[in-house]
Image (tube, rainbow, N blue to C red; front, side, top):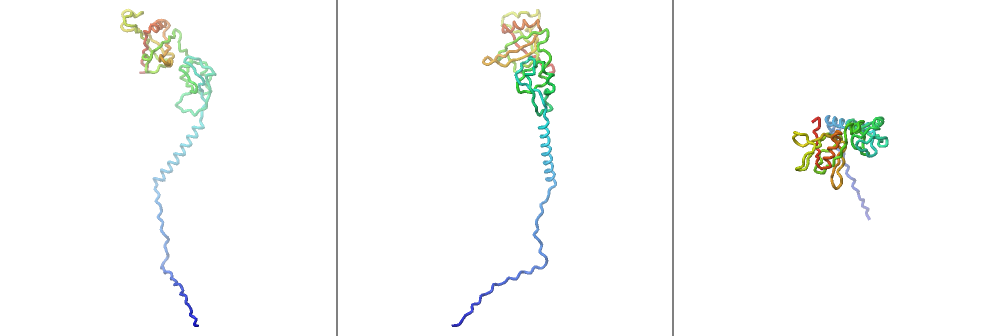
Length: 233
């Protein structure tokens, strides 16, 4: 029996390709930096930092001020029980009584109606009586159609005009005077409209000699209230 030798073919060896000269590394394109974008980024970062700094300063800069803790009517004398204190970040444009000056407002009168939870401003109090010497206070009820659209505030000057019923004589009218009789007055307080009727009661200060006349006009439902123009108009 003859032995046959099987020859196994050796794998072909690939010779590396000879490259002449050094091999250059792959080129990576560099990103172009834009000076304008960099400057804008720096500006935004600086602005953000400044804003945070201002906010922190505002939060930390608080002022002790006087507050109102219960209802105070116009003309009422302020007491320590009417007032409280609070620490707030106060805007420079807001005028409020500082807590250290609370003694300067105790004993004064409320020039306007004060509500709980509000800051007390210097202009909201007065040392003067709302009804001065030689004056009388007359309450006047106004029906809804007689109430001015302009809000009635303390200190506002008005004219109280007598409008008698048709055919009725105008009592107390000066001889030779043309037009309806009127009396000057000043608003001391105006109530809110009464539920159901809408009637607004206005306390008006007049000269003492005119008080009884105005009261008679009110009783006869022959009075109308007219607003005077502001002095600075």
